[in-house]
Image (cartoon, rainbow, N blue to C red):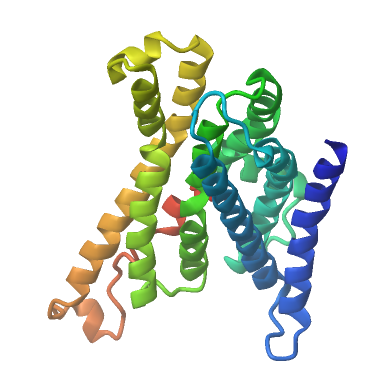
Length: 297
């Protein structure tokens, strides 16, 4: 157990540092520190998501009995991935720190105190940080000890929720570098919307449906036939997913309705005649909406 935990503790931060150094020092790239940190954090999140999804598929496809069948990868990957959530809290803070510097928040007043930046970060990303803390302090012991080896199929399907994370990460990178006008951003946004809905919002209704088939009971009777802790955990895990999905939907509406408006003939205004550009929404996936979203990553 400790060996696998140690491996995860080295792998995710190590991949972050390696990626950041490569982006900064490869002659053809020479990215700034801030750009390298932001993109490296997204890269690590995407790698973790691909690994988790692959493991989830292997586990789910190998379990014939959804309750009793076990797969060694279930416990192994949980132990390996737990350090990722601790690392990612730090990585998200570093991204937030450099975004403040890029936006020029420190140009006139000097460097913002670390304590004030940390407080601002926790206030802005409270839900995501809380999600990561719960994954480590609650979901980890429940998955490894409380289950007592039962329900590996369900754990495998839950790993598949990470399928949406690479698209979320790519969307954030495109927004960060002002690529909202590109076809890639629109295609990625549509893909993110579909994968997030299927892999995260429909996740627990699907698991309840599968159990109803296994127990030969109507799906509406499942909550009354499983431990109350299961219902509570499912509700608490699903609530932020629904909230984040609402942000993604709001961003998608702005993206595509905004694109339609930009194709209309411009109306001359006094500001136009003075050489000023009329203000309008820059994109559908606003940085405020999508930066509040998680990944798994």
